[in-house]
Length: 287
Image 1 (cartoon, rainbow, N blue to C red):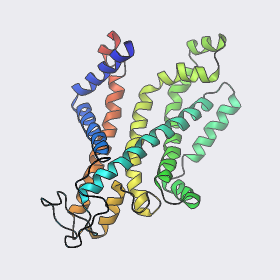
Image 2 (spheres, rainbow, N blue to C red):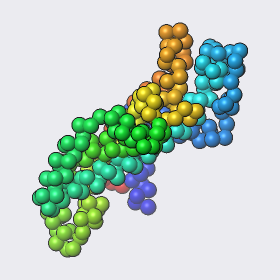
Image 3 (cartoon, rainbow, N blue to C red):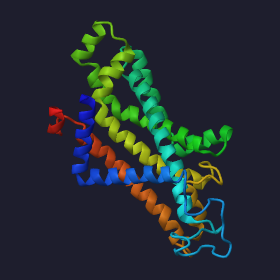
């Protein structure tokens, strides 16, 4: 019951701020559109209209058509599922890798911690695009390559950013007391270190989700992202960006969607950090 009350307080606090309200509304609409697209889109994805190629918005095609005569709105709705899946899996993957590295970087063994820090500092300089290219060689262009590349890159970044707060918690007296009472490294990490770095995690993971949406568009444009025929926002941008000077509206819609969602994800992390911090949110201390 206490957990449910805390969640309600956090959501109410986020809704009370303009940025938090914007983030919640946009993300809720994203999830709703992705759900609706499972059952309905204005036009079948494979349906094309050769007589209305690059058509302007009309009653038949609300956002117009692309170069094959496919309905832009239908592809954007279906693409929301792909991008939502990529964002969720990237958050899970980067959180798992980041927390694993954090646990190693604050380990009691000085040698293990030093080696872990050196490895993270060395690998963090590798661009996400290069990681995606390396993964695309054995696995081919797919959404899995986008998720894998983003999870590795953002997990390393998460570990580096969260290390100072995690190290401070690992050296605290209550952690030393827990270890003296027989608590293992995993228990210390989950029960004591992770709760103390939650504000950092909320911001970094929301940024990872937002950046994964941008990465999907960029990697798909380079040919190592989502495969051909798979609906995604990056695919919609890729198919229309070549004629942006002639038919700018077909680029405007997917670009606008990506921009609104990325902003919402970044603002969501900031709002969640402020609402979930008992110091910054007095209502949370009373919950």
